Length: 263
Image (cartoon, rainbow, N blue to C red):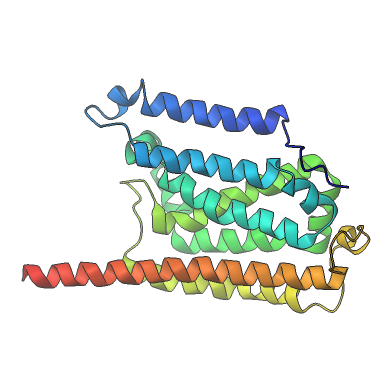
C-alpha cells in the first residue's frame, strides 16, 4: 500500500531542483549587479519561481507519485496537470527579463528562438507531445520504466513552457503576443486537445493495462477511474485556458480604454 510518509529524494530530482534554486539565487543576488545594474531584488518573481519548483516536486516527489504510478490513472492525470499548469506558469512568471536576455538576446540564436516561440509551433509541439505520451503503449512504457517516466515528465514540462510562452514570455526580444492573438491562440489549443480528451473519456476499452490490473484502493473500478481521468484532463485544462482567456480579454479591454482616454 501507499506510504504517505515517503517523499522521493533521488539525487537527480532533488539535486536538479536544488541546483535550479541555487542558480536562481546566484543570478538574482550576487550577479544581479552584472546582469541588471540598479535593479532591485525581484521578490515577487522569486516567490513565483520557487513556487514553481515546489509544485514540480509536489507532483513527482510527493506520495502522490506512488498513487499515480501504481494505482489510479486519475492521480496520474492530476500529477500531469500540476506539471503543465501551475509549475510551468509560475516558472515563466518567476523569470525577470534580464535573466533570459543573455540567452534570447544572442543573435546567433535568434532564428532558433523565432521558430520555437512561434505560436503555431508552440501549440503544435504541445498538442503532439502530450498526445503521444498518452498513447497506450507510450503511457505504459513510461509506467514500467523509471528513466522513461522521468523523460516523459520533463518533456511535458518543456512543452508546457512553450505552451505558455506566447502569453507569458519574460523575454524582451520575443515578447508575448497581442491580447487579440492570445484570445485566438487559447481556444485553438483547446480544439487541438479535444481528440485526446474524447479518446480517454469516451473509450469503451481500458486503455492502460497498468491501471486495469492495479489493486483497487478507492471506490472506482478501472473504467470509472479512466472516465474521471479524462474528465479531469478536459475540465482542468478548459478551466485554466478560459481563465487565461478572460484575463486576456480584460487586459485587452483595459488597454483599449486607456488608449481611448489619451485621444
